[in-house]
Length: 218
Length: 218
DNA sequence: AATAACATTCTTGTATACAAAGCCCTTGAC
DNA sequence: GTCAAGGGCTTTGTATACAAGAATGTTATT
Image (tube, rainbow over all chains, first blue to last red; front, side, top):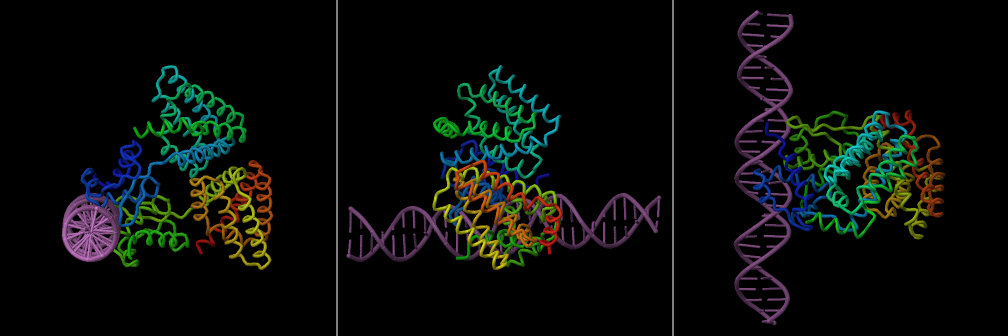
């Protein structure tokens, strides 16, 4: 059942780029990478095409593929867009979310609190991600959900670093409570604002963000 | 200087799909298309990879590429997302737009009015697109600008049909005035709301939208 | 006559071969 | 000594060849 190697390759390459295995501007050698993955250049090139479209790499004709790590300005803009998308999710979800999903949010928050008590950053990160994905899902708009999830993934390494900052987990937790409260009340504006500020927190502090960039690059 | 045929091909294929040259579910035969464009399967496949990522076609392993024309529910969701993105653009632009750009918006509106007076739908469409792109640009967020422009392009054929509806151009025009007023006043909430309702108008009327779908498919 | 199994054919996925454009190093001229 | 031009070397872009899975049609059996 060996099929669609390009899928695996693009996923693995994406992971490598996210991990900071490549620095900004690094050229991706097709033959070297093909050898590394044990395939020919054909599926590898197809994978590169896809990564280029998501902006992870830049494909310069006759020159090659160059990785594009986001700089400070890029990250600020990406977090700002993330805040807008999540605000939209909240706005729409306020009118559309089901009681069952609200319960799920509550459960996710309890898990988050447990992770904080245990001082487990990774676990908090996972639960936090689940919390947000529930809201994306219940925006009732699959395109919005998809865009939000994609950007969320893209910002993953930087967000993770942010959580390690002193007191951030606890503050994040309090914001979660406010978000759920707005959704339970069914107030679109309040939900949008709560989510916007929650996400904006992560991209807002320039100094912290820069530290996260450096750490993510290792 | 013949290079990157995949670029041209994906652009042309995209145009063909937008034009409604293919029905939903049609399979894109690689060899036939390759022959049609006068290239081999290799660059054509790279083009297909890219179209698959934007959702225009679905790539089923070992089965082929199938065009995915948006259905009624898809269009409603896409217009809703468009409304959210434009609202975000307006919200951010309210604080960031320059006086020069506000002048440009005013000029665009004058042109729109001229197009209405002349009864020229195509011209109105072009000027209207310019109007919106100015706002995308002055959101001050290139990622948001890019997303908005991309979705705008995707919805182009459906939006165009909408303009032919009775009185829509005039109403659209009035909404433009309200948008500019909010931006001039520098009121983020008002600008966001004005843009949201303006765009939502286009996707809001289910019956009209369905007619647009049929017409766009020709 | 209907159905299932098999074979043929068609199509996709991958590898390899070839062509052309860019890069780098050498060499020559000033 | 420096700079420019030219050639080879590398690498990308494309075509073609090959392998394997899916679709289809045929035949045999019940």
